[in-house]
Every structure is written in structure tokens, then in C-alpha cells.
Image (cartoon, rainbow, N blue to C red; front, side, top):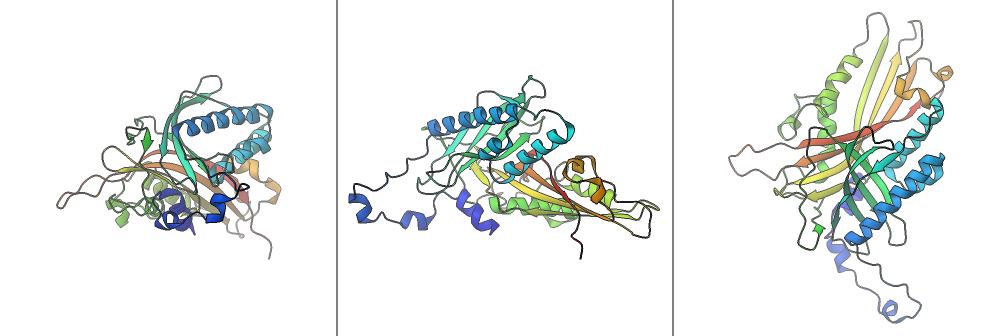
Length: 340
């Protein structure tokens, strides 16, 4: 299911879509709906500005419903979580100030799913904490509104990706199964999840850089997994791919950039023979009442990434590895198991 959805989003040259023809009746009927307009950089600019305006109105007024109306997939989960945390702390919902975006608009069939990527400087509304954010927007049908599906923060030491653009201003989308890359775009999330869960000894380390967003997760989780002496506490962590869209675009070096999401589930279990309850992580506190937590707690996070994938190396050349250049996300849910 995940691959099917990703394929719909990532591949612009689906032969089945191209083979479809418009019924003759639809061509001649005066009551037929007009054909969908093709995606353009101007369309993307309007969609981006509509999102920025409405998102700020929603956050300034504390209107969660309006904020969610302009998001989808993982970004909806993280937006709802931001409102939940603000309510729990009694603080206003964080607001953002955006600069002028650089928009990367693929040339896609107008009848299918439309998407584009924006790279833009973003700060808090007071100008503090500036970052470069990479955003993926989706419109699943021509009649529906554009929604922000994913937003990830470029690592501070990284430069914005060099995405290929033609002389008409269009970016080149990549098929999710593109074999010209070291890792096909649809496989990138599972490679990262494998390294995060199994560490540098896994064969996946041959094609993706280890470190901050991969094996460092593994190291951190391994420390948390080992029960502290006398505590009776054990933590199991699982990383998994999602059914959310991915956004693959060609880069100027012949490789590609892939935007995608992972989920992370951490289950804390306490030996019932040991006194006390499972401790609630600070970032999970707004999502569950402490009175409900006893011997087990499940904390779910949505994590969003941007990864540069090099082209397939030439024969006899080891070549570069895929590198994660951006990440963001956080806790979206905390729950206890249902009583049996």
C-alpha cells in the first residue's frame, strides 16, 4: 500500500495514465466539466502564499480546525500535536515568518495527483530561530485545495539542495523506482529505518551515510533499551515506513533528493514486580494523563526527512552514499495498552 501511494505521487510518466483517452461524449457535451489546468510555477506560488496566510491566521487565533484544513498526512499529525502542546502549557501556538520561496514544480499530468516542493527561510514570528525549511505540497484532485504534506528542516551545516530545473522553470520529477539512483526513491525510507533500528553493522550502511539521523538513533535507543539497574524498565523501539507521499526530484549532479516520513514507536514496559510506574517522557506528557500510566506506555512519533541520493556509481567506483540533509518531527501520540 505504501509503495502504491508513493508511486502515484512520485512518478510523472505513468504509462497507464498516458494511455487513458477522453470519452467522446465528454468532448462534445456543453455540460462537461472543463479539463484540469496543468500545473505551473505560478500555480505553485499562489498555493504556497495561500498556505502561509491561512496557517498564520489559524495559529494566531488558535484555530486548530483551520490549520488542519491546510495540511495533510504527517504534517496534519504534527500540526495537531503542536496545538495540543500549546494548550497543555497554556502558551500560544508557535507562529512562523517565511521569506521568498524557491519553488520546484514538476511537469505532471493534470489529471493525476499534483505536487511541488518549496525551499524557503523560516523563522519564529519574532525573527528568532531561523532555518531553511523544505516543504512538500500535494493536491490529490484538481478540484481540491493544496495542502502541506511534509516540512523538514535543513541541517544548519548543509547548503540548500541543487535541484535540476529546465529552461522553462520546471523541475524534473523522478519515478519512485528509478534505477539510475544508488537507491530507488521508494526504498530510501526503509534503508534509513533499517540503519536506525539495526545500526552500522547492517548492509544498508554501504549505501547510506551513518551518523546523526541513522545510526545515532540506534545508539541512543540501545542505551534506552538496556534496563537501568533495579528499575525493571525496558524500552523497545521500532522505525517504520509510512503510507504518506514521497517527493523525489532530480538534482544537478545526476542524483536526486527524496522527501519522506518515518514513524517511530517506543514502547516502555516496567516489570510489575518493581515498584513505581513507567516514567512519561517530557515530550509525551501533553498527550496522556499520568493517572492512566502504569506498567506500559507507547509513544509514537512522526519524523520527516530530506535525503540526497547519488547516481549509480560507475563500474569499479565505490561512489558516494545517500546523505540525510534535513529532519524534523516529534511526538504525535502517547497511549497505554487496552485492558484485556
